[in-house]
Length: 264
Image (tube, rainbow, N blue to C red; front, side, top):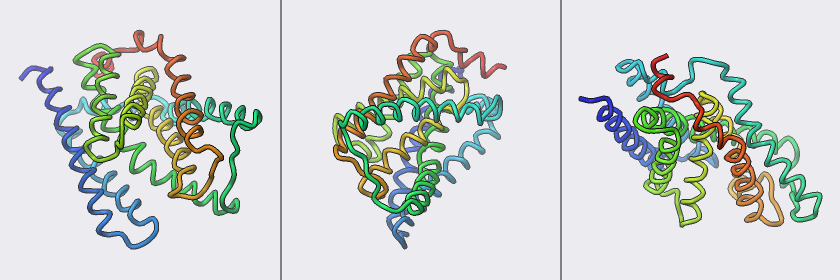
């Protein structure tokens, strides 16, 4: 079997496994719910356990998986901080500017201790259920394999399209706006993965972005704003996404090819 066919089968298998795992996790967590956050916790544990177990098994069969994930070399804390700052910096500046200009108001819904404990719980769930697991599969295994088959930009765009298809298949897309948002999110995460040569950068970006988004959501009741649509769509998504794309766009073409990283 040629390397291209092997990589193609790996990508298809990873996508199918992810869809099945997420669907099973959704159904199982609903059945075993015992408390206010138990469904989310059960879902996160099943997804994280399923992804890590599958990748460890794959790692034992194919040592190039270590290069695909790019988590065992470099400076993971530094890379994660780069991802965190890449989102938090533009988002904080945009939000602060809008508050000062009286475009939007932000209010706390609970007392400080409740807010901190809720944010810590939310961040932990986001890390397990989304940031770690989705990055391992899509910006780790899938994008790395695509990078060996095509150029940097095609690999980023194809994995973003597959990421959107995955979200559609598991029921996380409610309309065209959601589909375009998820695809753009995938592009941004793919860019960070490529230009930093580390999976920890998109993990950090993914973690702080989704934690912030959900903190302003009705489900958690931590923070609220006078204009939720403007806040969550433009201030906390479009602006930081655009900054990352603008800053990193020219670096994508000069980034180290995936095939070279795998051979190193």
